[in-house]
Length: 343
Image (cartoon, rainbow, N blue to C red):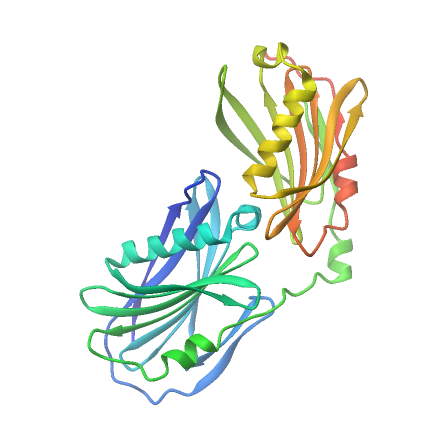
């Protein structure tokens, strides 16, 4: 049985969050006497029972200027298509509200299939929240379960022609197991090549274990739009972020402590977290604040500094139960350097 994969990525209700879904529409072929087998590994993060060897594919999907990898495992049992999909959203997924991610993924899947929901209910798999729903298009019936485990969206789906049933639907859906991620080997961890990256245009330097990627975003303030420049390096166990935003004259008339407090509250609100600890710090003559916060899925360690009219942020985001060993090394590496004058 041949299927045509259809990728669908929808923006999350919050601008920085997204949800993707990958589903399939099947054609019909006779059954071939399927033999059930266990597929998956800790590297992939799941294990499930399939009635035959699944076809594995990977797709790079661009969303809001970023690429996310969709891994799909698909096989057929007669006229029925069975599917497991995995999409890791990295730090954005870890910081998002899992229920909102699931809601967006469900809505995107149903709209893209041209289907309508028959029933739906909230479910869990261990500590991971999920949703189960039944939907129908003009030709197919879908039974779908989705789970958010940290930053990763897992989907299982059984698609059958209308007026047909698949006797092993529950067997397939119930077989999904979420596995602990494979730990990074000590040798691999030691091989991380930390280097100093100097950004004279932005007036700072910092050390990263791999080359950071620059992202630019225009944000609105009371005094008009300003540009946020973010340097991100995603280590296997964390996301390391250095961000710069020059507020210009808008910051000159405000108390630095008030600006830092507002920035801290905004960062915590953005990850839907709660404050764990905080303290005032300095960087030479400049004021700053250091804090830690937790959301349901992520732990954030951050230092913020206000240097004149410019806000600098150093952030480490890691899974809530797996702290990043080099958090202090990254945060301590921040230095102010002479800013290159604009030509």
